[in-house]
Length: 330
Image 1 (cartoon, rainbow, N blue to C red):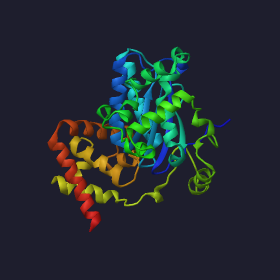
Image 2 (image 1 turned 90 degrees about the vertical axis):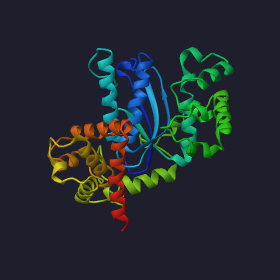
Image 3 (image 1 turned 135 degrees about the horizontal axis):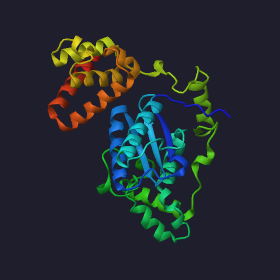
């Protein structure tokens, strides 16, 4: 049977899972978990993906994501490659870490986001050693589980800066209400909402499934990375972005296209082309002197790292970004 196709469009919500190869562990120690979350945080920022919930288990992980752009495949490919590279390097291993490609369900956030977040957060309580434990022991364990977004949902002091909690909390009435919601689910033993999946990849009611089919599947040819370019608004032409970056930085535009040019300047151009021009990293590579998409990804990641450590570089990026914004507002 053919594997299900990815449905991607700007603003889409997904439940993403990925398991270790042959169900082996993908986290051998806490250093792995710290590194996974660090890479995840950087990847979210680089690809403009929003993370609403996560949980790391020994041999798999769950993420609830929203893509501002239609770029789930691109985001997950690079993210999984980065963590696999770290894992193999740190543990002196090689080869595949994950069992095939990741699984992603397109989610109707209005109907399923709240329930799905609870199901994800209760994963640690479903471990074999806890299945026969009483309710209080299971709640104590899941409530204190470090490798989950649940602690930040029930205690503001434990919130992390890469999870926006308000959307889910507003659905139930705040942190105290969310805690009770999760506890009620643990006590009652709620079923997996993913059992309601339709068409192999859609978690939503009939109206949502019909709308997705009409607007995104029947409207055009669906492939592994479908193109929904006409859905993006406020797209800036690549040549305009390049000109704005050069002017804001006070440099010759040719420096941005030179393969051996300044890495920071080219990184700024690469990231703003990706964010503002709605083109792929392969297309960006052609503009930046014929480099491949992996080199473009590396330029953007290095830029994010440098901006986090250097205030001046961050200011240069913001200046270029505002230059483009001001031009669009005219």
